[in-house]
Image (cartoon, rainbow, N blue to C red; front, side, top):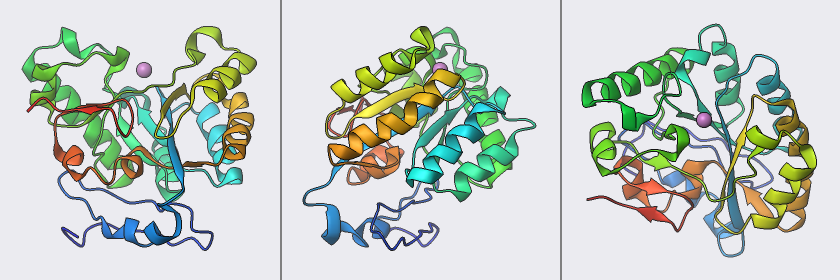
Length: 246
Ligand code: NI
């Protein structure tokens, strides 16, 4: 345990616990609370939702996740936060993780270093103002990052390895089938919480994957044993596919 500044929450059903990460610290003790219970057999995966928050669909999604007791990770766009701080607060209260997805969804490869830092800091401040907590991870829009950007932003970039293209098809069945077929242990699944078809697909996705004995955890929980990641400048598509530039 590196510091006492994280908090955890003990469920009685031994589902993985929410951990609150500071930007430069990690409290690994939270994982020890259930490691003896589930680590040997559990198959962890992370559901992630980009481009919100959306005032109607994100709360609908949160209702579904609450019903199934599933914790997800939300990569929010900074400019979508004003007026919807209560949605981020609810995410936090219900043990989801919040990461940055840039301020305006512009490609980071089109920005110079000063813009990159301003984009990072402005977005993280918007998240902090809503939740009193800074995010520790981000997701670059369009998968666009590189070693130069990583060394400027100094945050782990969370990519993905299961992609139903839900933003393109907006089709419930297509989203369900693609995710159910392609998910493996340690997968990071990409969805978007701004389309009704994506939200409607979630209950069946959860049921299908729980039937295959997957356990849903947040991204930081998925990556917890790789402490270096939480302050490193690498990219990750899944638990085992992290690439470091240094
Ligand atoms: Ni996006």
